[in-house]
Length: 119
Image 1 (tube, helix red, strand yellow):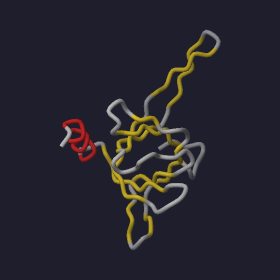
Image 2 (cartoon, helix red, strand yellow):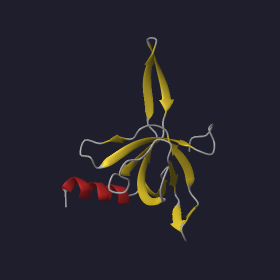
Image 3 (cartoon, helix red, strand yellow):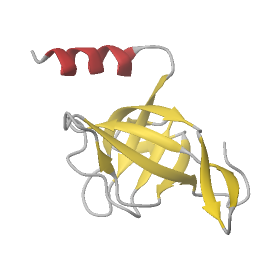
């Protein structure tokens, strides 16, 4: 096994990762594991720096070939009897970015059921 893939498997099984379900625009829901973070992004505007919180999830390429803008990720969800249960629903906001090794997608997400709250 590729050493990068083995290390990635360990990270996605460690504390800080979560079970989730990827809900593509077309096709069946897919059970996945994600690593979620909330970095603060700095954006220069007219000589000033604007700080904004963002919501990011990392998704293994081995689980989702290419996440789509407009698709959903339900964090904490499971598929039970072909139905997605529980979880907090997030929308993928932009085109996913693939890491250098081609193993992990970085997706910017936002809470789908409440535009004012980021969990």
